[in-house]
Image 1 (spheres, rainbow, N blue to C red):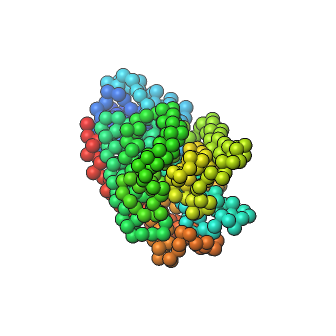
Image 2 (cartoon, rainbow, N blue to C red):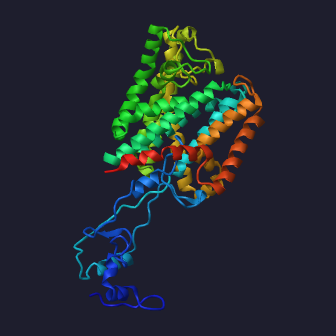
Image 3 (cartoon, helix red, strand yellow):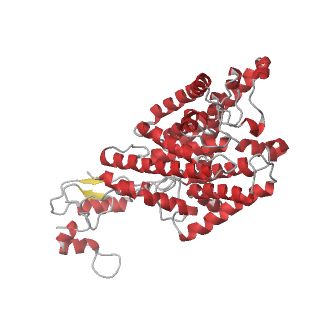
Length: 481
């Protein structure tokens, strides 16, 4: 019997209560009353498992296809830590646990449970930047205006949507278990959730495209990406990275050969043309864009809270950026006669998503939405650097977390904001080829920030994120043992 000790407040101490009521050790799911919650006797009977584990339920919190990265937290958005773990037990708690386990009982040993990481707020910030980048590409001034304004607009073209796709891949990996891919019943549930999301995004994308907005809708392509990624869900970082690199090197060339051989055409001019467009000829064809998704899956398998990992990713991102854009520049620098063979139109007229098949020299450019290996490598590097920068900024500067909270909320409901901006473009009659003044872009961004901030005060999820989450509820039945 444990000797009673004095409590810190009025009444009898906790150890004394244990001595007076030995059965209390069997309360609260078999956790000893004096022991920390993370310490659980192995042989104590456990309550029946629910349809999902606590970690599963936590990671299922995000709802949108671009919003599933991280774990639900009730902490206010502006002050949630970036992938931090719960603090370790104090020595006093450990001593108390040791004393309790010496009491006469059937308990022979203890095991500890791993703490659960909180939501990766840096990925939400990166996703918000991707949304704003797509705003700039669709309603911003033309990059030809020059100066800092033109440089920022040029930076958004092609690279924002690539960042969007990479973050979508990260979401898939987190749904599937992030650093430890789920297997068995939990793995089947993750697959079911992804299939449901893919189907809904495909349907939503087709519906929005049938509405004929002036810009090409990416959502249907995301549905295809998700389905193609299913066989890769259980792969680890190294394997995923190798597949992404091989696909980036071979995919654009294979697309070029298939389209040239079967005369499938180049681009869809913003129109939905069925499976062929989604896989080969569209603005975001899967054969060219899957490397972004797979790279995002590999990224999410890493410990993104570790400074060493972020430093290595910075080197990798810089190397890919230099290899993609730099090698293309060097080719035309040392072989200037190739420039005359390029038939890819300049500016937005050449942003079709695929390489024109009338000249093999088009495979050497790295311009936005050209669909070449050089563009894929460069955009992947840029996306990795953006993610690392977002994570590091919020980790190193806690005050930035509060200042950027309204922007971060945009990233938590990116599906709603993305669809909303398509509606706004159509209602306002904005043409994708028009040169809108800067204030139009700023108005779109401000509207998104205000809406997301006000909505998040009352609701945990965005409107479309809530519907998407509700639609995936049936996936829980696949988690039964």
